[in-house]
Length: 388
Image 1 (tube, rainbow, N blue to C red):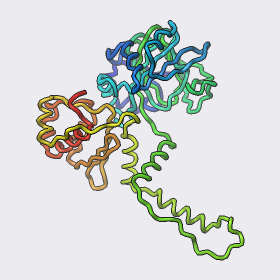
Image 2: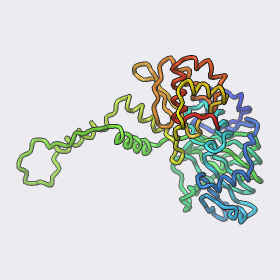
Image 3: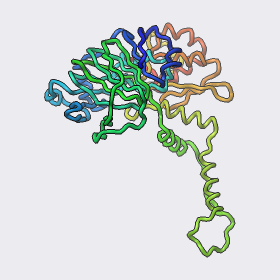
Image 4: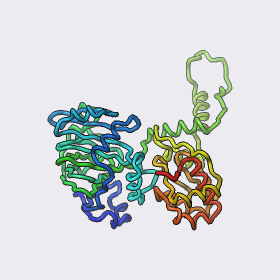
């Protein structure tokens, strides 16, 4: 049975991680004041922009679902029926600072695991059908009411309907049904079948957490090795003799091939750390981080920070850091590495924990020259800016 608790801002993160994270769903009533970050018209306006990823799903289980990809036009929305449709817009945290700040509520989880905040607006009966997600998700009800039907048993490979583009489950039998009100949050682990249905016009924010598959890790490793490793050793034959069967692959030749491949893919702990940190912090395609211009030196940056008062993280910037074998730290942001000393460990935690940083809060930290130098470098690289 799904567990219910109250007051997200006061909940016990340790208990959640021990009892629920990646294990079982959790319903949190009145978890937070429902955020009033945008209205349906503003969401539809974003869905009309070329740079914004959006989808429109029309239909229901009796009438099948139709999937349309944005950008959309006003005429597309004018022609919609009175019921049974849903508009979904991805990466809201990249477009509106309020959603980037909303993600701070979830930073009791690894920063590099946070994928994005997606917002869906639906009218009566609107739905994307029964399905599973390959990632953990928090479903925050922002406006109106949405009914969630949930199965208890995870299904990593469910039987799907013929509508393969939407990955709708063919066999779905809810074990439990919940009606979420504004401010409620439902947490669902990966692969838990669920089906959300709008009960009147409503808006939901989904905070998803990326979890790379073995295939993704292998692809990333191959790309990283091609870019960073410079192996020039080539295949060499073992001692040869006259062979009456030239097409036969001899065991000694295969052993040479295996030895060459093993040597090329044998990564050190340092290389593996760097490869994984690069993968988990690089921006999504289309959300590249451009350097600030003009660049500032330490003194000019510090003066500008005092003048502006607040420093804002680039919405596409993901942070992670780790200690190397020598005791120093490597900070990775946006797929790039920035060295830091062992004494900067606390400062790295400050940078990773907040989407915006106030000058007064930073002032004691910036008394340390290496912290000031690091933050100046991150500003010049475009990781931070004085405007949201």
